[in-house]
Image 1: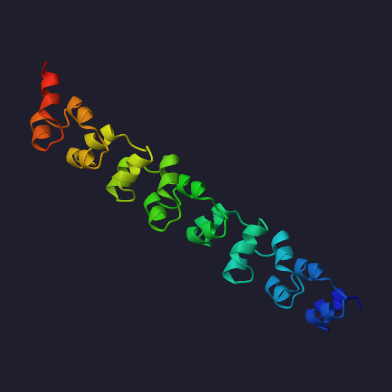
Image 2: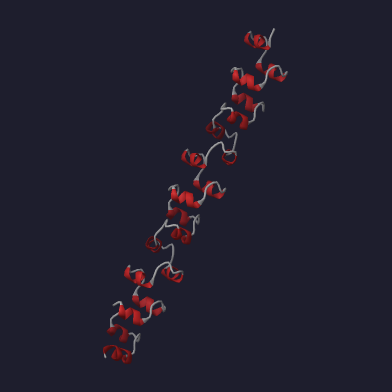
Length: 209
């Protein structure tokens, strides 16, 4: 009697057939004599082979914990984009394991810039450099102080004053803006300058002449 006949007539179980090497796991799966789940459980087939032959979907592999998301991504069985889309991997894990770059995350809106900054996933400098966040937003959300913005040349003093991000008084006090420039741009009245000692009477007279 052939092995096929033995199986079809129930004279021999698939397990016995496989155990004695009379039938390969591949044949058993092909003929439906053994389920992929059983094959994987008995180590008759590797998860990699199961995925390669389409006997099991990546989703099934992940859902049953047979393969870690990291391994799936490593072997190219699932793209990071699909993993994130299907919730198989969180953006945080993807970034932590280097499966996805922060630039890619921000570009595809997988993570908001605000969240990225809050969790230190991206530096404010990088966010500004890649245009993911405007300087105005950075200042508005307190992610960067005006002093740091001016120090790194991200924003000019003129723009800072124009948007009210820094008062003229503060600018003069910290030496960020010279009194002459303040007067020239109308940021400070001559009367106020004299009152606060920011300008001498002699300079005022020279300007009036």
